[in-house]
Length: 256
Image 1 (cartoon, rainbow, N blue to C red):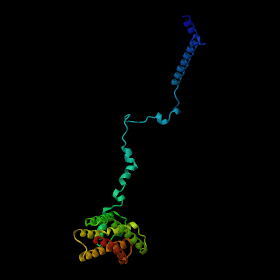
Image 2: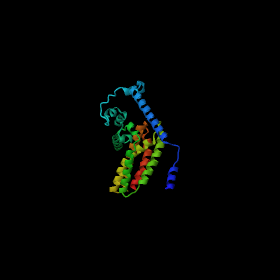
Image 3: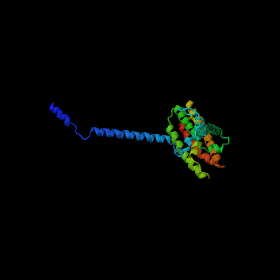
Image 4: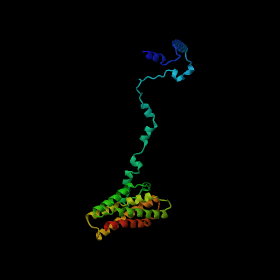
C-alpha cells in the first residue's frame, strides 16, 4: 500500500494548482461578458446605407412563387435562334437536289427540239446523272452483262475529254461538274436502248439502226444544252460530234 500511495503522489506532478483553475474560469467569464456587450452594441447601431447596393434595398417586385421558375415563352419568342431555324432552306435544297429542275432537264433531254433553259442547265446537279448511270448498269445487268466498271470508267474519261474541248472552244470557263451533269442527263436515251436489250438482241440490222438513232438523240440533246448554257451559238455540230463519239462507246457496250 505504501508503494501505491507513493505512486499516486508522484503521478503527473505539475505546478498547476486549484488557484490557477479559478483564475482561468474568471478570465473566461470576463471574455463572455465582453463578447455579449460588443454584440449588443453592434445590433443597436444601424448599418450605413452604402453597405448594401441600391438594388437590394428596393423591392424587387417578384410576383411569382419561390422554387417555381417563371414562364420563358417571352425569352423563346425573342430569341434569334428560333427564327433562324424557320428561315433555313430544306435539306434537299442544301444538298443541291431540286426535283423540279431534275424533271425539267429530263424533259429537255427527251425532247431534242425543245429549247433548253441555260440558267437551269448550268447548274452542277449530279443527282440525275448518278441515277441514270445506275439505271444503265442495272439494265445491262438484267441483260446478262456486268459492266458497272466500264460505265463509270467511260463516263469519267468522256467527261474529262468534253470538259477540255469546251474550255478550248468557249469564251467562258465551264466547270467539270456542269459537263458531268449534262452528259449524265443525256445518258437517258441510252438507258432506253439498254432496256430494249433485255427483251431482244441488238446484234443485227435493227439493233444497229436503233443504236444509231439513240446515239444521235443523245449527242443532239447534249450539244443543244451546251450551246444554251455556254452561249455558243452556231457551234452545235462541232460539239455534237465529240458527244456522239462518247455515246457511241456506250452503244457498243450495250450491243456487244
